[in-house]
Image (spheres, rainbow, N blue to C red):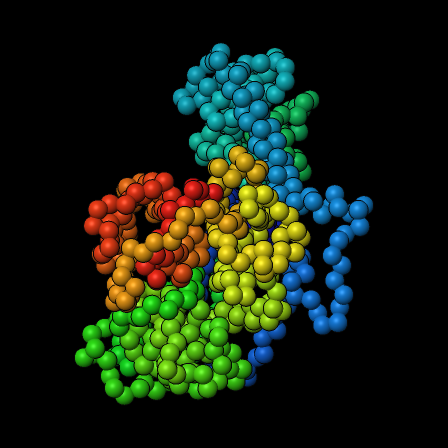
Length: 628
């Protein structure tokens, strides 16, 4: 529902800007400046909520440590309160309500109404242009069309529509002068811009006030220039004398469409003093306040002192991946200081940012080859961790691109929600999480005792596709699966992205799916080895891969799928395939139309589908892989 949040923020910005215009600027006679203000603030209202600015502050600036309270806001029952009974099935009469995807209904309804409003404006424009095929008179840039019925005495673009039968020559000359001002100032462009904004913000009453205010400014501007030629009194009398019997389309500028009382009153108003132009500067604090409210996020971070002289730069990475493979230092060994760096005192809550860490388990932490005190695990952001490996009281961590980012308040909230969810001990849990911009998503985690596990993120407004042994399961049925039903099966986790859909999934299962979990038990042949059992060094060699067509990471960068002339290399193992999926955590490779050579197989071994375990040096020829 981020799109709705964005539109509501746009509405709030435009509302505040309009309130300032109504009370402070509306009566000023700087008509052109008022026009610029209305158009620019409307555009700025769309820009401000789209900005994402971060202000970093030290955690020491807080007057006191705040305890973070994580509130489970999901609609599933993975996190029950102690002692509360959970209702496993809804009453039959409410099943149809729960089956409705309300966010999807709201999204479709919004765009349907927006499309209707745009269609109405487009229809009006086509209706106007249809009458421009026969031009009766050309006066400079003006194209005059004489017509007696429908919309008359108005203009659109550079076309003026006049009813010559009911106008005298003098009145016609005045109207042409008036409409020429509209045309020369490109007021029709303003009309079309406001029509698009009105379609996008049709639910916001402020946009209709903007439309009315802009139309008034247009008329004030044209009235002022026209009245100079014939005098204010004569011009006001002519406004009152000319009557328009039918309403003209909203895209046109009608000579007497807008309320005459306000126009005549403005004709006889004294020009505003130039000093009053300073009033417009008062809009700057309003804009800054809106930017601070909707676009700025304050990030509290603890400042650490690593051994290297240069502080690591900050980046944003969204994956946390565990791996037991040995790590390479990010810098040469002779550049690593023997002396451990000093760090600031850990925050009072001592919330560990990494799973499976407890006081006393590790005495030293090595991050990208540099030594840190154990309390860094309460400060480092989980988002930047690539691999972890613990042994002998030492925890080794590598980060993405060898750069460290410190935990934000949102990171801490996410960790607390995650800990609470996983503490339930359930195989299947689903819990809410936040992105750094405050937008929400959900994480679905599967943990099978003795059988591995994994997880996938799901954006708000998207559906989760659950497949077990080739059949689609409801979430209730999927959650009822036992550990025995999940052991010795392949677990596949896929995320399709926020703004895209997998066409194959869409064709087979329908629209709206953002992520998929698939569990299956592939038929396999006897397991064989491609590497000598004692060859441990090759198992620790870094994996490299390439593809001719595309390399696609899932949203959380836990899996990579490669397409077209794929090559994967690890030491003496060389795999060539049409399609390949690689899980960096488990070191498992699935490949289609594949052949390989290795330490034990100098001649190529080929198969339709194969599975490789890069840890133990084994491979299997499969009869099928469902996602291929």
